[in-house]
Length: 316
Image 1: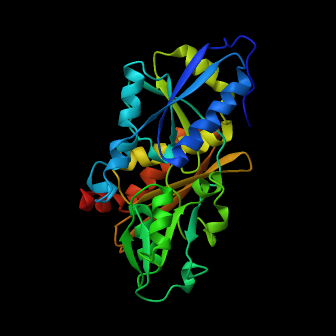
Image 2: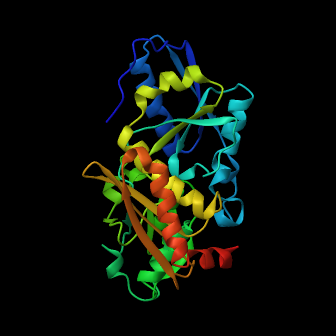
């Protein structure tokens, strides 16, 4: 369900969007720009492309150099110094703990949050033989692959989407796992050999959804962005992030969370695992959308009761 513009919402004269400069990030920012231009025809919407530390450090796993927060710090600096008004993020890259000076103004309607299997050699994970090499940059994906397919080799894969596809095409990997949403947004859906069901690869919190960030003090921007918000996606992502925040804060750990609307309720599934998949704790919880934060906290408490705390302590 998408909000409709309020006749009292003032039309801003100019909005500058901070964005990473990868092709996917620019598509996402361009998508939001088009939505804003449709809502406010007299508004001039501009993009401010930036290279983040997460884009620059490609020789080490993301978890070893500061986690996904490296993709947003420079964009937030542009908000603070006035170079940009808003920043567009993939919600899975937004740290679970945000600084008080920032606000998540809205979450837009979600693309598919599921993972995609991409390969030139195999049609599905089940077809890969022992020792075949699967590339991923995600501890979440790695732990689930190890748990379900312990005979496969999992290797680190960094870089933007085009770089990852190039490495696959060069033969560095037998297959890779990427977010299906990114491939579809860039018109690369034909590269998907299979979309992995949540039972095989539970998504990251916020995967497939776009979030728009601004300064908390900018009530004017928050108001004009509300027509872009999607209520169902917001409830599901809020539950997912509450679950992840309760267990791991902004740390990068093997953790997944996926909320779906089912019969008017938020159905949330989540897991925490060791990176090698040797131990996985799973659970699910359901509740009213208005209580999305509580749903996420309740599921986190359930997993802690099952021993998730021991897994997290080992990771620390």
